[in-house]
Length: 118
Image (cartoon, rainbow, N blue to C red):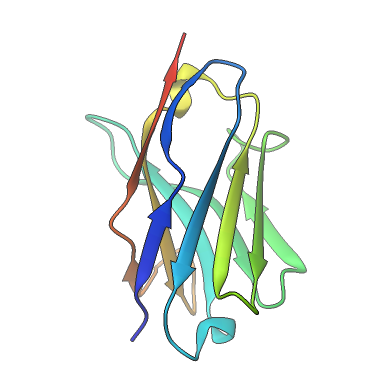
C-alpha cells in the first residue's frame, strides 16, 4: 500500500512558477513509476508528467513540455513537479499518482489546487 500526500499548490500570476511535492509512504516507493495528473473544472483528468525508476526516464504531455519538470528523490520518497511559465489554462487540481504503469495508476493523492490568474 502506498499513500501519497501532495503540497505546494496555490495562486500564481501567469508567467510565474510553482513547485509541487508529493510525499509517499511505503518501502516500495522505488518500485513504482510516479506521475502527475490534473483535472480542470468540467474536464476529464489528464496526464501531465511521469518519472520512472531512478529518474532516467521521464514523459510529459505536449501541453507542458519545456515548461514543467518532474523529478524524484528516492531517499526522501518524494516526487516533485516544477512548473514554470504558468498559463491560465494550467489551472486545475493536480494529483500525484503511483503505479507499475503510470498511465493506469494504482494509487492517488488527494490533490492540490493550482490557480493561474491572467
